[in-house]
Length: 247
Image (tube, helix red, strand yellow):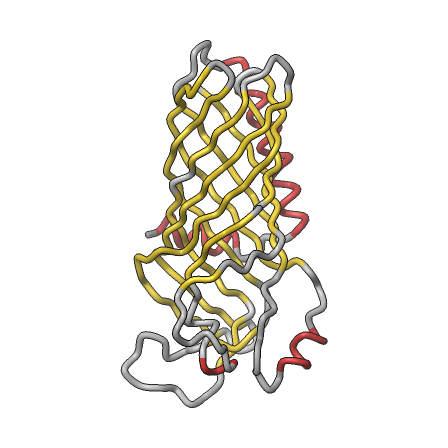
């Protein structure tokens, strides 16, 4: 849990500059490891940093226009994850890997949320969050082409389970957390990678996702009309920088 605490607090300040810096450090570090690459690698370590458009759906919230006017940035949701996987061959021209990892997703879009979620009583006060974090377990599966060039195409499937959620509000230092173990989403991510020996770095674009509706954010407070629904396919733009090292 101490590791999770450190990750949560480090990633809470992640922005566009940090996203690019992480990518550069990954690239530099793993180039140094290239000399230690295995001839026939069986395992892969993957580090991923993602940037995502804010989910600004506020439905019938009375203060909707004010919140949207005060937050016109397109991007403000970031994700950082690390996983370890096992490599396997599919055919002469196709290979894959299956792994397990941990990730945290931070949304910096200010919005109302259900402070009383999971409690036996309703808090009549409207609470806001401007740092909403989801801590996730991941089981990524990736298929990719095997070519003689340095570029390969890939297709990733990313199931995610959420085990903790945290809502913070910087104005009054409010902090509310929920421990859970529930389906979060499954993403489908095509991409392209550039490889140097046992190291590769690439870009993935989220093509489609199925996600559980987060009732902490989407509920009667904002007059969400999907009260009886549990899943959605809403898909804000998401781009991921992915680095892998095989050994």
